[in-house]
Image 1 (cartoon, rainbow, N blue to C red):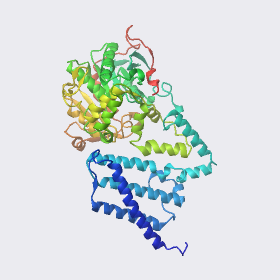
Image 2 (image 1 turned 135 degrees about the horizontal axis):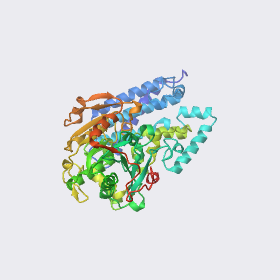
Image 3 (image 1 turned 180 degrees about the vertical axis):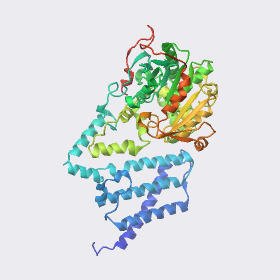
Image 4 (image 1 turned 90 degrees about the horizontal axis):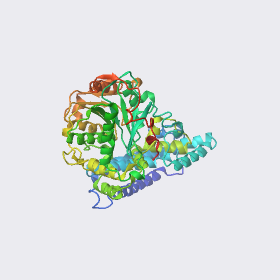
Length: 563
């Protein structure tokens, strides 16, 4: 150490500079959060809280300065957990400063005195900013990437450039080795055939796997914002195959990936020519008076709306319904509420309410940035800075296989669900010429929600029980929006919760819930069994007679169309 350096003076100057930086940061924070007095609610900070945060920041920063660039334990954050960070004093120091800034900015967002939605937006903006500005995202600061470049004599950098150019060409960051998968070859492989198609969807009938099947066929309505094969990834985790193994004659809607010819399609079209038509054709093919139906995510919202239309017409072709991670009541939409306000919806209506397409990549990017470190920057660092190829993973391949949506359908959905929550207001919405009133949908329903779902928060999934009058069963599974649903019994993973009582709130339901080890699928299969009706011989061929013939093998060509 140089004895001529006045470290006490340096420390005082450092603390003074920290104070100046704090003042500038606070001013910038307020300007970003409140660009005009009329466009955002008032934002203020309690002086004592600011003083407490500032003192804590200066104290921790001074401790780091006094410690200097000496060896220090690596930060607990997994982005900086590799030994290369702790062995490089400069990198370790930059990571520690970054984490201190992140903690302080998040605390500043929490200290803001404003309404709940503005505070949530501030928190989200800070999280996005900090995720993007992490030193791990930059080659000049990432000690692990630098070490790998030295060990490979620059090959990792060359591979990273190649990965970047490839991703620029395909239009999205690779989350998996996409060359390892092909729809119909090693994902979406359950045997079946397309037996009907129109301009909105293909209807796939799957080959029975039992000698006897239930007389009521089973219709699956997946979300139209994703490809259906999340329910048929691999034989060992295919919900479609599981249904067939349980003796259900299974049909699945494969939504068409919207193109320019569909840019005027509306929510009514998706109900009339989509869900209602699928129910009608399934009945006809199976020669059945009633079907059982399942809706997943937005597919559940579409199914629920279609059931309300049928109830208004005093028709009952659906004997029971299953809703997986579905909103009917949009009063608690979690983090997605941050994006929705009247100005945003009006902009979308002006932009595409009369025609146009919402590009699939825009939706995919939105969902990815809900978890930026895990679904964006993790791959930026691995693919480009380290020159790695992400390992094959079927779920992430599906996640990257995005779909477009017709603008008018999307604009109606935004206003009447996320913004105004009109579907659960009896008679407020008119769909296909009928007033939507869920109180008339009097059928048995099975409702599933995932405990850690950030797309459909568990309380939002539970809210469905308040609006449907029939006999209801609610089950909660562990994990998130996808992993919680795709949890086959053969894996013997995670757990689920049940409670025969359905109190007013989810919190009250949870207090009385019982945890069970393993998959929730058998619980659902047990509930579904009596809904199937009597057993009949399984059909020997796809379709029915000359009216519904096999058009092409499953999974069909609609699901293979790229956005």
